[in-house]
Image (tube, rainbow, N blue to C red; front, top):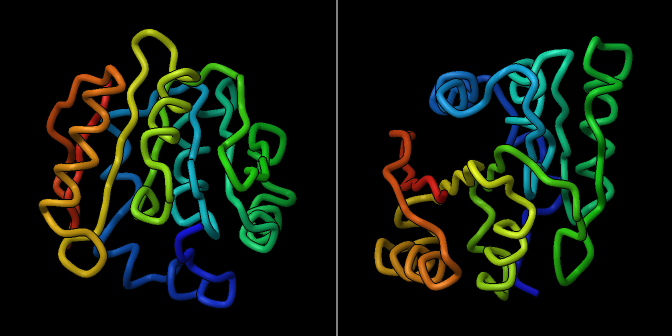
Length: 180
């Protein structure tokens, strides 16, 4: 397994400064519509999850998937008593995959694909659960963890799996692609 961000750093991942630099609503509004079923892969403490739940509305649903119970517990606390508590499902991933069969309209993997030891398996799994017109948005950090060459290698693997690659949103200090 590759290094993953520990639960102890959850506050670093979910703060007001980051929200200003990487506003989840602005990034995700073009892709998520009311009524959709969406997946937040490697959701961490839910920085994107709450906005994803708002965008899907009461008729949609959100699956927050993470390897760490502590990250899922952070989200559980955030949604407790909210209008979206019943539309958000927390799912603990296995060590070798997400472990879902439910079809989704949209999936997000923000700053986590580089943490996965078998990226091809991840891409194949996401492709298998995307609805026919579904989209998978991958956003990875620039330079620090993921070089341009490494990101291009991920996209090449996505093509091998059968994804069509389109441009992604502009995100501060990031590189992105939409996989269809």
